[in-house]
Amino acid sequence: MSLTISDVTRIAKLAQLEMSEQQTATALDQLNGIFALAEQMQAVDTDGVAPLSHPLAAHMNNIALRLREDVATEANRRDDYQAVAPKTQDGLYLVPKVIE
Image (tube, rainbow, N blue to C red; front, side, top):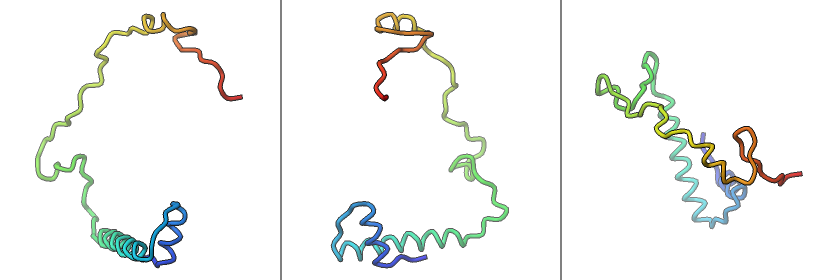
C-alpha cells in the first residue's frame, strides 16, 4: 500500500494541519516508508514462533517480572477522609448534579 499526494492532503485537512507542498511531499515519503516497513514485517514467516511474554525472554531464562505484589500497603482511612466532606452516603461522596 502506498499513499498519494491527495491522500496526504486529505489526511492533513482532517487533522486540521496546514502543510506546504514541500511538507506534503516530505510527509508522503515518510508515510510511504512506514508502510513499506510494515509490509516487510508482514512478509516475515512467523509460523511456529511462540509469542514472548517479555522482550528479553528469548535471551534469558526464568526472567522474574519486576511487578510488585498487589497488596494494600496503607490502612483504610475512608471514614477519616469523609468526615470533613460536606455530604456522603454509603461510603461515596455526594456532589451537586451538573448535567440535566
